[in-house]
Image (cartoon, rainbow, N blue to C red):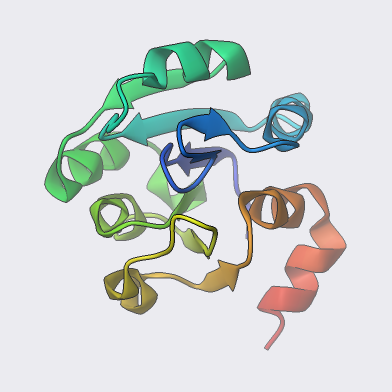
Length: 143
C-alpha cells in the first residue's frame, strides 16, 4: 500500500483537552521528512486549530460536519491517503481514504466509526508510529 497523504483530526485525535499530545510534533516532523503531505481537517471545537496547525507546520481546513470533511478529503489523492480520527465527524474523512485508523484516547471514540476503520490503536502516537515504521504497519495489515 503506497501512502503519501495523511488527513488528521484535531480534538480527541492529535490533541486532548485542546493541547497537542506529547510526541505528536516530533512524529509529524518525521512523517513530513519521509515525504508525507499532512492535512488537519477539524470542526475546531475549541477554536485553536490554526494555532495548533501552525505549531505543527501543516495545513488546516475547518469542516463543521462529516459531510464537509468528506468533501475536503475527496479533493485529495484518496487512493494514497490515510485518515486518522476518533469522532463521528471523522467518518467523512474515513469513507474515501485508502486506509483508516481510529485512535482510542481519553476523549474516547464514537462507536459509529468502527464500521469505517481498518485499524484501531490506543493513541495517536501509535497511529503515527505505524506510518513511520513500515515493519509494524506490514505486520498489522498482513493477511
